[in-house]
Image (cartoon, rainbow, N blue to C red; front, side, top):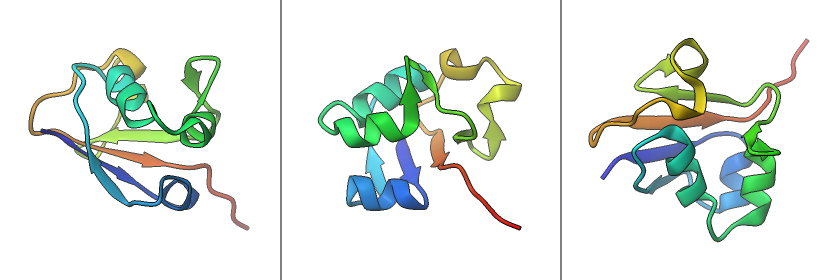
Length: 88
């Protein structure tokens, strides 16, 4: 089963840094990940789209360079979700 890694404040919201979920697409994987955690869902999604500046990577590749939330997820793929980051 594919693993999902959460970073930054998403770890704090979920209470874990890594979880295993199922889903054939990134959207399905995120929906499964957030099924019982509305705060996590609200931190990642807005109106069924990724929130601005939230980055999702599959095996180190940004899904925005693939097919976004409909990008297919393989059984061994690792999804990493990064919150918006600020800096200066």
